[in-house]
Length: 123
Image (cartoon, rainbow, N blue to C red; front, top):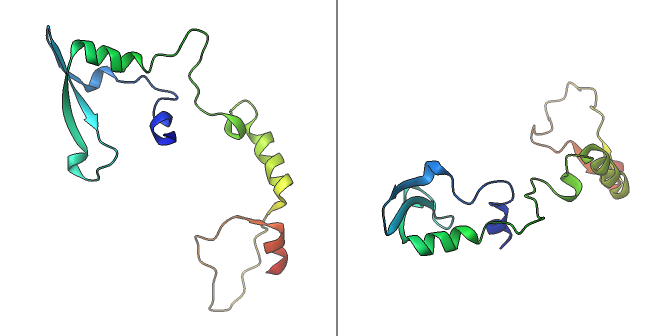
């Protein structure tokens, strides 16, 4: 359910680019099936005008509601402060780069830049 709703948090339900054909009785448009991988993922769908409008109106927000892009910790108004506070509460600290030794064994490049304080103390 969350994956379905997240597609509509900051976009219109259907863009003009996806509309292929419209006549007196039907609308044909491009669709993307999120359950299929590969070239079969993109197909077209033709619906009766009434059914198309019904499905479109499901995505129209009621008066007074606003579309959101980010919510909570990732809200742009105070993102840096809230993430810093969350890291502080979780006890996370930034790793300081260690001086390079001449040993052959190196840490993988995909290692995380943040680790919990307990894990940093163990290394």
